[in-house]
Length: 164
Image (cartoon, rainbow, N blue to C red; front, side):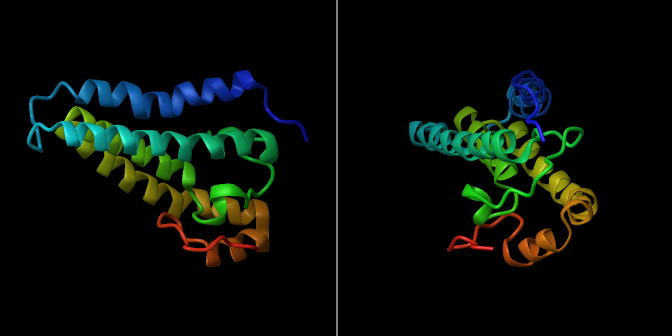
């Protein structure tokens, strides 16, 4: 097996998280509705949550490239099941990272539109994972994925690392 080129990774990052985390929030941030009182504390909290999300998103992207021979995109799926790093605590750390990024942006920008987009993105991904991604993973990785799925939550992390 060969890992996809860095160019394929960059393309998929620009297409998916680029649109989800940059293009759409930028467009929605211009809606004139402020859900919270204007506050420096809120901006600092948003920046911190954004940074945490960026880290939580970047580690799985790297692991997909180096260990799983795939990208974050469903059209370039991983060839190996990754149960390492943050995947030992939650099945979808990359999407959790994106949710943190979006929540951080919503708080930092004090933007109702971005907050609504975050909720919608969570809902749509939950449906996608239940009806498309998880059945696909079961077909590709069989009993290993079924066992992993039974022991590691979809979104909320385990308190201890799954040893598999």
